Length: 167
Image (cartoon, rainbow, N blue to C red; front, side):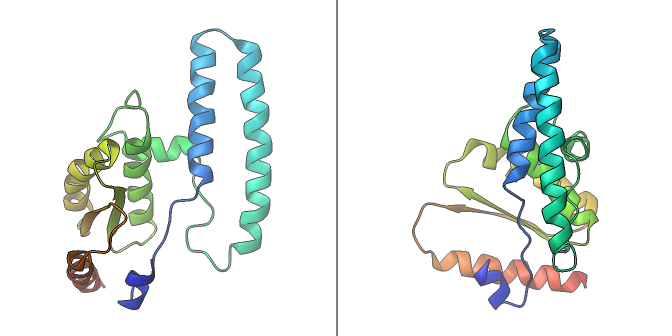
């Protein structure tokens, strides 16, 4: 984030609670599929309280953050649907859906930061090419292995140049 901001950019991050909402959503679907209606009811109740708490805090920061309010997890999955079927569970579908959400909110480019060798990150890298072309925004994937790399700075500079051309 600091490197992007040092280059004149503004970085938006996916919220951590997105993963929690996703896990709960998938658990709800599995409970319904197993006809575990008691379990499904528990997930509905959890979701109600999580949404309530989340919206309370989002309201406090709505004037400062451009990505508020966060979309419902179903909306994120719907955005990813043209690229990944919902049965492809995990981080990749969230990353694609959230990238499209951010583009629709005005992001001028997408950076897929991922651990080195991360399989979901590799899937996202492949799919982001199509997303980037469809929405006409630059995207890059940067794998991290815990070491500093001079090529990362060059990648970010080239990316920021492309993103600034969109403005």
